[in-house]
Image 1 (cartoon, rainbow, N blue to C red):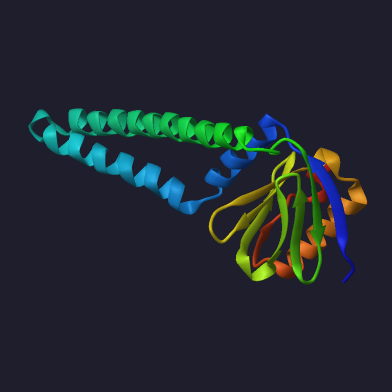
Image 2 (cartoon, rainbow, N blue to C red):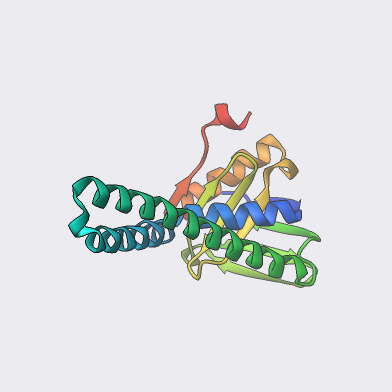
Length: 176
């Protein structure tokens, strides 16, 4: 397989959306939100046990919805803090060169360069505007698709499909 070389330049919005997408693609993050809300809703139902079934269920539903909202706000705040920390890193918004090859993913940026072998990547997925490649340590590479020619995007998808175990790309109709 031949190498695919691309250059991208991320914006603050790309970084925020990439971290958000990574969180939403994480089953453990979603489970944490739902299970936490269910536990608090169960407590509300138990506390209102002598008020009748309708009041118990209503209290449980209100508390469940409220806890989901609280978790969403906390999650968004944490994602914003992570994005803010990334924006402030030296070279975070500079051009990054990626080389996709059979050996792994090579990165060259103002802050440094390196090669990570494919066995260190556990997932790659695509949103309408980004490719996100997740490292086994939950670090992510965020590639804005606007910087990629259509043929380069197809070649990057092909390399990722061969070398990354869990890939989820949008259909070609959605990305056109």
